[in-house]
Length: 331
Image 1 (tube, helix red, strand yellow):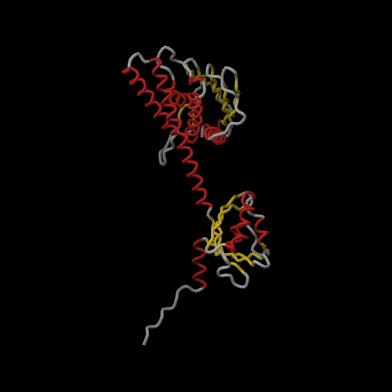
Image 2 (tube, rainbow, N blue to C red):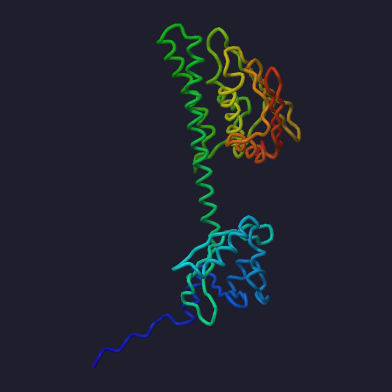
């Protein structure tokens, strides 16, 4: 006698448990009546009450405005697509933005009674990770380009005061080592516990590579009160100051032999203002808007510190005022 077939464990109940565990939302769409149905997980994902009668157009109103037309066109075109399809888009649930991946079969494959079937997946975590990787890649590219520019500028600065090739090699090595210490400040290390620093110490480490050691030493002057910078804000402030120093070496006062940089700070209150003043550099026309990765980093960093940056373009230089919340700076 032939062996008895084993009973399948995949009954409706077990299938439902597996779907819930995977975070999959089921949907169906009647292509004639435009009625859109979802399971409980789908209604929670979209932030829609489960007892509502939902049409495809109703559900479209929850799609992010920047993606809405694209998604509508894509769903309308799915019936002409041969094989499986996948569409990623954003939806708005209150003030939250979620990324959803809609998947199904095109070309009326597996359509039953004029109803198409598919799944929704919440892919917000994956999309945020991808955006984080893109941001990191952009920042790394920005830093590498800046490092090459800085190394060239430091070589020129060192050559002005060196009396021999040996002296130049020694001074340049010193500056590049100082630059490495500065980059350690702006590179967060996972698992490393920081203890904060004094504002004056941060400035000294960050600006040391750019000061002349010869006849024109002292072109960078720092005058700040004794003020602690907390462990949480030290890296952010260091990134902002390092970006300003890099721009000064590339375009500003530190790009010329006679340019000067003064960094001052008022006595700390509820707000702290660090004033970055450059004089004697090349005349730079005021840009219409501040764009680029460096400007974005500056705005984002100051926002993290509860403040903002203002720029005054002067004929003889530039004055940049960094205003921060004292509570954020010390945290």
